[in-house]
Amino acid sequence: MAKLHDILQGIEVIQRQGADDIPVHALQFDSRRIEKNDLFFAVTGTQIDGHRFIGQAIEQGAGAIICQRIPTELPETKCVETTFILVKNVSIALGIAASNFHGNPSRKLRLLGITGTNGKTTTVTSLFRLFTKLGHKAGLLSTIGNQIGDHTIAASHTTPDALQINRLLRQMVEEGCEYCFMEASSHALSQHRTAGLMFSGGIFSNLTQDHLDYHVTFEQYLQAKKSFFDSLPENAFALINADDHNAEFMVQDCQARKYYYGTRPPQDFTVRVLGSHFDGMDLDMDGSKIHTELIGRFNASNLLAVYASAILFGQSKDRVFTALEGLGNVPGRFESVHSKSVQPRSRETDQDITAIIDYAHTPDALKNVLETIHHIKDHNQRVITVVGTGGNRDRAKRPLMARIADTLSHKVVLTSDNPRWEEPFQILHDMQQGIDSQEEEKVITIPERREAIRTALQLADPGDIVLVAGKGHETYQEIKGVRNYFDDKEVIMEFFRE
Image (cartoon, rainbow, N blue to C red; front, side, top):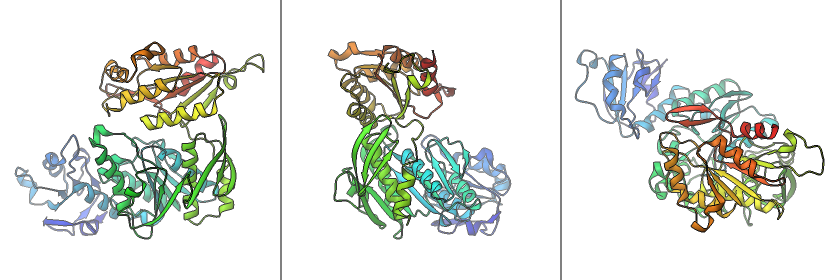
């Protein structure tokens, strides 16, 4: 329980009708959850306008309403008892209020956020593991799950809503966490879910086409990412990938201390790949040689961001290098499964089939993974790629991803990802537009994902590499509003056992 005037601290109020010393039991933006003395936020979303439900919130006992306009038709009997707070942007007010309501937990630990198109999950997961190995209790907010110490909480979004974020951060503080590492998606930033948070550091990984179904233009997508760095305080650090051509633009209005990392010197932190194979890489990182189980130049960059962040947080260089070598891979990120490891062959000399599971669901990510495979593989090993794209999402990337798979693979199997409310055949039709007519014979289209994966594995000869892209760690397929259990890795393991 808190007082309304305390919750409003830091919020720019345009107009107030009613008392501000009333008690607030809970914050809600879903009118169906309102109970007596709750504070309702009439958030204007992409699909639903919360202002439509102000009347319902009042009927259910809301003590106060934060809105951008006061509706003309309201339940008269209870309206006189309700306080109205008029603000410019309800979503920003929600973030600040959530932080105040939970005691500003982001100020009581060291919060680091990362934004960019690719690499966010690998980087924050590796940071969480690293700081845990260094003896610090930490929290994690990521695509593959939220974590408080050794306790895991399932994640439904890359970045939770403002109420969830602050609830989780408060729990982290109560359980003794010193650090929290979180992904900041473009959706979350444009919806102001991180408003009110105090970041100690921020990382920019890279920027390529994605989410244009939501942002409409690349410029809007770019501005959403940039807003994260615009809001960093002066005493925070901004760690920027200098290999990305958007690096300087991203921090041109940033007040935080700026540091740059990359594969090309001179930068504040640099890395060079000395050798790659399907079990890891040897790196020269900041002048020291280390081995990692991560694979690919893009992961060398991700690991460098992890190292640099630890140093900027004051950790010992020697201890960080020792801990980095034992971090291991991140589920569904260039995760390899060898047929021999599942079902050993009778002869040690037999070559096995290597299946690689990766979350690559953007053109750039798919290109990075396939180029990494080509860089590591022997000249006689073939690459077979299984790939799909999500329904009700950016249609422009569908032919691009098919073209990349076609260009960098010996065989391609186009299939479903998460079709959501779209018909799989329409999605696959869009993808097929990226296939050159002269290349069509090496492309197979199989809508059913399990069958597509099994077909790709059947096409593979000993020594070949099968990339299954798009879903990575996910253990479901979303079809017509229903999440059906599905695990790419499980399908691969079943095939190899047979």
